[in-house]
Length: 410
Image (tube, rainbow, N blue to C red; front, side, top):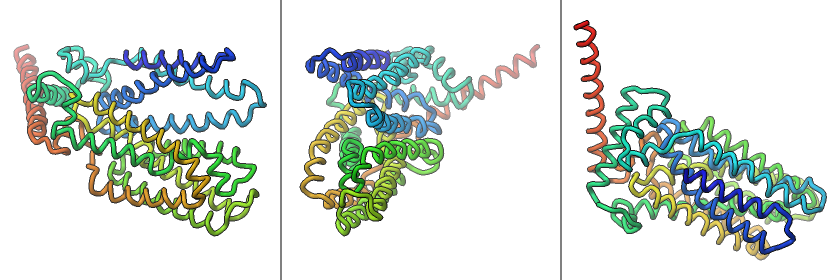
């Protein structure tokens, strides 16, 4: 229901923005209200997706967050095709109400989080929801439920009561460091800056009067690349591999852009060098949407234990918006004052992220949320996870034996 409420708040804010009240105050109020809805959804949606998705599909489902972000970039291009009037800004803002409303309506048709229900002690309802979301009962489902209960029991045993201070405990401190620095890394790739200031950036690489058209196609490239990632890539490569490979590719491509722009400064008209630079920008955006774009949100929803996942994702989302704001303020000044050196700066940042990914990030692909305890060094929880599997297998064997006995008696 929390996601439904976030959707409702966002839509209220969106309506206030679309209605032409001729009041800048009302428009700003709508922006603030929508911001509360988006902020809540940014925390809740990755958390719900991570908690409900089976581990073999968690990558695809978690990556959809970035897919819809990319669709939002295409929405920007709508205003370039509308005659100059109030509709030029009302239509793009109004289109946001469609997915914003759909997520709220859609959540009315699905079940509550299994882990949240189990955490509240509503085990029968939690098991029923898990069976529903997995499409039926099976030994694997029973083992997964035992795994969830074991993890929750261990978390409750370790500490009673919950507060933000738990994020400072040794078992969580490193994870907090990872999500904050990872969200900083997302912004340092330069792709949020590309999304926000695409017309200026394409003008800087030589798109000239075609910069708005080129920006619209830029959104299409992002959607296609993130769709390819969700369907074909996420389940085939590890998270760490995606981070390292994406950062390396973006570093090389940003360096090529810097060299092209430095050697052949834009003239205001389309030239061979400007076409090359534009293509490289598209390739760079595709690299981001095949790696850091979707995987960062997926990773954020995976690495925290159930007990602190809500707080951990909130910290990560807050860091994302903070660093997003910082880079959005820096980028236009960098483009104006540094020119081609802006792309060199982002290239250096991306190469640094390769080193960061290798030494700091942990591989989480193919791991259940409870197995993350072993990945991040919590040995006791790792032992309990294995114990829960053994218990589930024993229960299933006992159940099968009882069924056979009943049939024999009959």
